[in-house]
Length: 377
Ligand SMILES: CC(C)(COP(=O)(O)OP(=O)(O)OC[C@H]1O[C@@H](n2cnc3c(N)ncnc32)[C@H](O)[C@@H]1OP(=O)(O)O)[C@@H](O)C(=O)NCCC(=O)NCCSC(=O)C1=CCCCC1=O
Image (cartoon, rainbow, N blue to C red):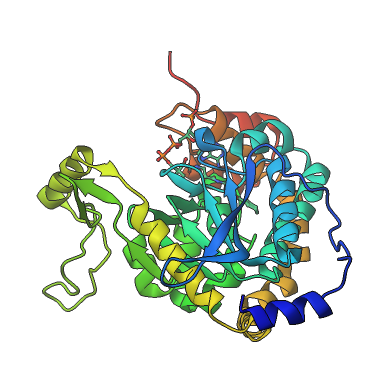
């Protein structure tokens, strides 16, 4: 700070600062809260200013969030939102496999399945988590360190900016596992990418590459993460060197096929993952934010959040109720199937379910058991 500014600050700043926090200064296991020095675009440290990193840390379960972790995320965003010395919030996951794959399917299957009133109470917390991101008084940058699936995609899309390493995948899982992606995806996707592509991404559960997510507008940027022989290479599983196929259809970011895909998989095996370019890009955006007027920046993002926020606020209470009741039927079946089924068979027999319902069969425990894949032998 310049000496004359420091003198003015000494004279005018209150001697005692009120604490506006409602929460204890503690984040739960599974959610890390870390203050890192804010840096100017030239890399020099801006004394006394910080960026907060909120990290989902449940790597064994792909950083899926348990009920306790949801509480931790809410508290983390609240704390960062209130902190006077915090410029930006970086929301990320531990490791390089997943940012987050949504709600914890083990907890869903073993605690919430068949327990709608409990899941409804959980959904109050989940809704508050999404709202805490959309209402954060600091800009939120999602550092997409790996796949962003299901509720992970929803809390990621609630952030203001997303930057991904290019091996990350993006998409929904609900309609395959017994849920509807109404924890934000059905609200955010249409305003972010238009109704048609929102329909594709939200309902068909086919993950998109990071390159495709950047192309359609779900994320702001993408950086390579795979290093082969000491050099960064683009995700070798998707097309990144051509925009159109011979018929003029866009193929950039689409999955390779055949021999090309096999070669890509071989290359992937040879390499190691290095997230240094991701971190550099995240720092670059944080530094750009640092070099703005704080209130004007905040007002700008608050206005730009409104299309997402308005859709979210219009639907979140109904969504919560529907998801609670759905824990009696499809979620009860689908999440148990994912949790209990053999590794290679974690989805129910969708045709058998549709056939049973076409005959008017009720949702009995026997029906549910019969639909869940069992280990053979
Ligand atoms: C497609 C996957 C994300 C990744 O598949 P793959 O790369 O094949 O890895 P896996 O072997 O499946 O996973 C590695 C281990 O992580 C465990 N895992 C992964 N995701 C979760 C999770 N969400 N909860 C708990 N554990 C998880 C997995 O079991 C493996 O461990 P193991 O010990 O078994 O080897 C695939 O993993 C996948 O589809 N995951 C589940 C995604 C999902 O259904 N998420 C919940 C969606 S619903 C949701 O999030 C909601 C949010 C709020 C509103 C309501 C709602 O439904």
